[in-house]
Length: 103
Image (cartoon, one colour):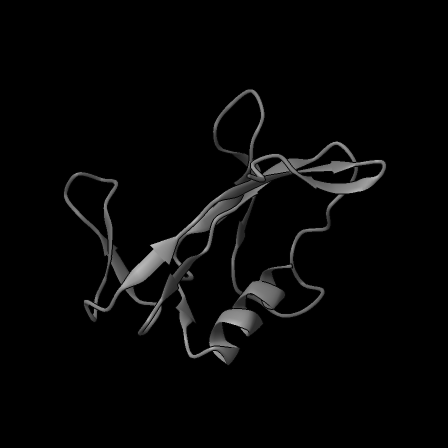
């Protein structure tokens, strides 16, 4: 999954910030597993029934290098190019993955 995100973004001329992680979600907002939105096929965490997690890559016009502002929340690219981030929450069910945040 993570390699597919990276491959799709890069094949369209964009970068993916590798410093920000996707994560499991449950009783706490941020739970294990944590994983990057970039990687090699077959090397990321394996999904299994009962897992709930986010997919929230930050895709940039430029490089993947970024910084966090003093407020501890605002992310900016170091090359000052535009970036976008969107999050979905996914549940792995017996029927397969379900996008909980689908609109």
